[in-house]
Length: 193
Image (cartoon, rainbow, N blue to C red; front, top):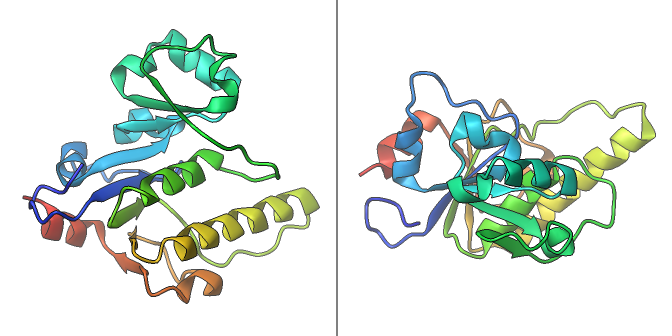
């Protein structure tokens, strides 16, 4: 979906699982700018147009509720047959071979990178956090950071914009010239038609 200004710049939103649209902002204002991508957990609160579901159990539940008829639903090719090859479901290749949290957020970032000039990131918190004493939790957090860094560095022509980010971004990510910050108010003002 191109932004409504007709500039030809392909723009997409990616919403984090933790994204909350402020009550004074209509979801339609975001959709007027670009399509919204995110995990299946974001559909109700963010009106996600392109829903990613990476696990069999939740995917089955979503299909029972006909989610594939309400939005673009994406599942990994590895589970498509196990879901009985449902109609109106899009597939993506690849699976994580390592422990990582919030997989659908990362998959959404990867999928939009190939089709975007601008990616608006809403609800993400990439601030420095204390390292967990739990080794698995710490390992998963490090893998998440590495994946984000890889997606941004592998797509240098994509402008990644953290919208309403809560503070200073991780040093490992702050180095990228194609990662910037803006407020939701500014984004709506600049990109709405």
